[in-house]
Length: 386
Image (cartoon, rainbow, N blue to C red; front, side, top):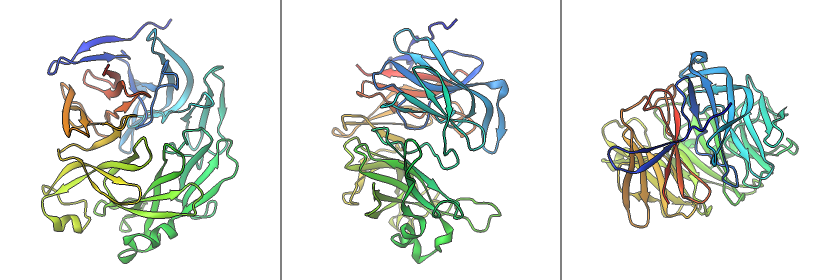
């Protein structure tokens, strides 16, 4: 029998109210990346979990094939299990994502398999194209996926593709080669050194944002070079237009109005270091949130403060939430103010084998959810703003 899991806490440093909405000493619990875990009506929150005894180190993450997918009822704060046998890992859980329009949930299974849950009936089906599916790009209308292919022998080659929700009409909208040709990388590298990835739809479903990485060709396996800054591109939904947006740091996202992009980047103490677009200038740079128009104009810091981890903007476009080792950070963009509503105490491991806070907004911007392992295993917390 499920029991209510909500506990109301006060942050010891700020006095702010916090809701802890999962409470397990045996489970590691995560939401996924920067995707909103609330249902469209706000009644449920989607998350995944795994018994810590089943987790084992796989590369730089802890993982298991015995993960589970849940909803938590935001009225009773009781959980509802909707799927089992998920591939769960410590960085992003089972990579769960809502299809708000069709009341479906997608999640990772073992190998290249993807499960699809009908939330109303709890029936699980097999997604038809698991081998091509990545969880960064479902359009807000629930009709189209966007994904990357990094295998030149598959489909039409390496590039960014879209497909209908039923896996029909798989279409390349930006090849790796043509993206490479409009980038500054072509002056220093070869097209075979590049891969494109992390594709995301704009909220208005008109554009796709994606990264380009340069491979470290000195390594025996595919590996991204740690010394070359990532590139950022935008393509129109049909692929007829595409352009280079600039060098980027990490974890880019559109603003809610689809007119701008934000990401975590750096402020260099020496302008020449920035001109060299190198990521290896230790001690010569500070983190910053960068904001830019989608046409590449007006690139600037959202706030000139050393904050930059996984920034996401609230639905009103007034605030950005981010985090660092110390706690959750709220940025008032218009007033250029930075507030820390929550401090992590004690500190916990924020590596991929630990817990990324992955702060996200609810649909109306009145609550912020984050992951925290400050009491042991990763659990879910909410900051109520109103």
